[in-house]
Image (cartoon, rainbow, N blue to C red; front, side, top):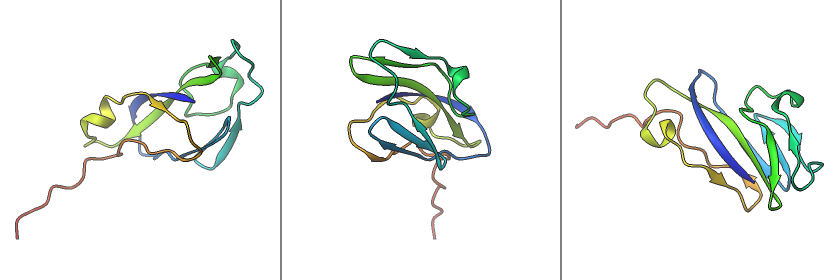
Length: 106
């Protein structure tokens, strides 16, 4: 699965878990296993506020874009994310919502 991230300022956070051709988005399961090779499932066909594109299967791999929420002080890796290729199942590591707080000298 290849996920392109589209950063948008939101007060909500995002959690993802991949299991085969399913993606759990903030606790809601989306099963994309029925998308055959070369097919496209329109974004409008999926009731998911986080989906930012159609879903395609190319070379056996699902391709989609998701909204990446971020805070007012998001770091560069969140504002300019690289696409994620998921080859294993489990929780998906996303760029941080906010920059870590700067440490103050004691």
